[in-house]
Length: 485
Image (cartoon, rainbow, N blue to C red; front, side, top):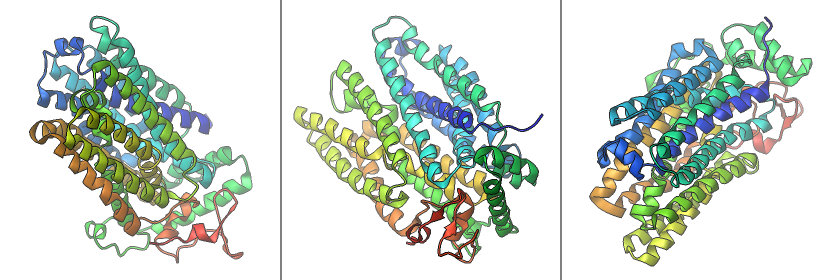
């Protein structure tokens, strides 16, 4: 049977996987305070509730680590996405039938491991099957928008079911995640793996076949195949050494790229987004002091805003470059977070309403900048031989930091009150100098030309006319080719 790939099916399949991720990120946030959930789980205390929510995150970290291991690359991008979706279905069945916190946590652990597989390999699958460098950034960035759509839909479904009665109030929203995971399986299954993976596994004929289907042009497919082979040749013999993560003396700087990606994603998820994501209704209702119905509406509106902003940032990420979006985001987010913390400290009714407005302002800035851009950056800057490891470890940093904030955040708020938000403020501020001094601009480059960012002696393609040929056959302008820090 001949290999076939349908890039649009791949794209929509991975998107549904990210909708599933967003759904699980938001669905419990809207039902934790309902009497039906409290009755079924026997009124869990703050620590137990935090573990119910955060177990998904810790398990997602484990899933990313498994997908990042050296032997995992043998299975390919496609298989890991499908296995992850299947695990999510099993975990959802366990969760929605739970009558104890132990069973619910077990179900969320299975969902989390599956989610780790999807989130760590899905962006790589899309990046490696994107037709052009200009398409790659928006296509990968939109994945975070899909996650935000999942969260927003989950919150609105939660809000609608607050008018129902009985256990269906929380069980149906939790169970509906199966729908998104099934779509992921159905859409991804008919496709071959990415062409870069076939070349990496020393199967060039299959890689060329898939490239021909993606580009629908034999000359372009052959040129990209030649660039992939050149990239692999550049990376031959370069192994990851622990010392390289501190002082990298290798030509392609593989360890440096992985380290930069891990720190970038880690900082992004220490800015407070998961604390807001998972406890949106609780923040508005308990921390800010809004009525329950108003809190539900505000939660739905905030997650909807997050989804819209993520799409905007993804669509326009090619304008200005990755670094500028991240720098502006960090600066503006810091301002909103400072005001938010100050207003919480005042602790009056008017100050609480203003704090809610500042939180919306923070989401308005975060959603088009630090929400999609880290995904884009790590999926395109990793070297081919270590791409699965680099992206997997970067995504594991997301889940580890998210677990830390989601588990410790509510407990910290009980102990120190509004001061817990200073923790998130610090990382909003740290984001600016980190991006400015350490990250390099990757906009406009094909995946096979990323090595040049770290060693100018490694040139792929024809540069005789003062520009370097890109994977799509176009030319990259000089200001895009060399932007150094």
